Image 1 (cartoon, rainbow, N blue to C red):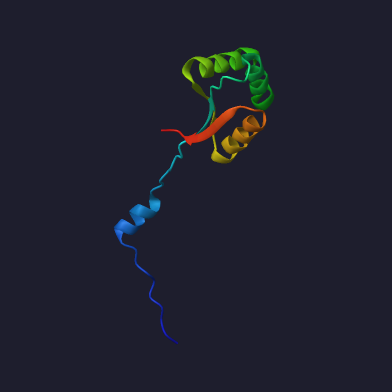
Image 2 (tube, rainbow, N blue to C red):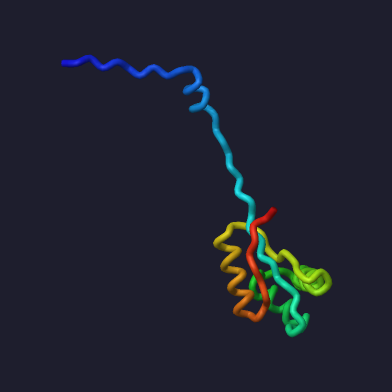
Length: 101
């Protein structure tokens, strides 16, 4: 029967094995773009329906879209951002998803 030698770990291997690396992913943003067609009150209603935000937050976001031409209305995981984007588009708003810079 052959004898088996235990593998000897170098100090570098044990040091690396003991370290933990945490990778944080950048969030994905749902961006709503201004359009000349959708009334501002409708945008507020859509935000409330899709996100469940308060009337004040919906109004602030709508004004940002109107005044700045676009606004980030939600940030988080990619799958959820894409889902929100589709819901906004189905509701008639121009929206996109982009990764946070």
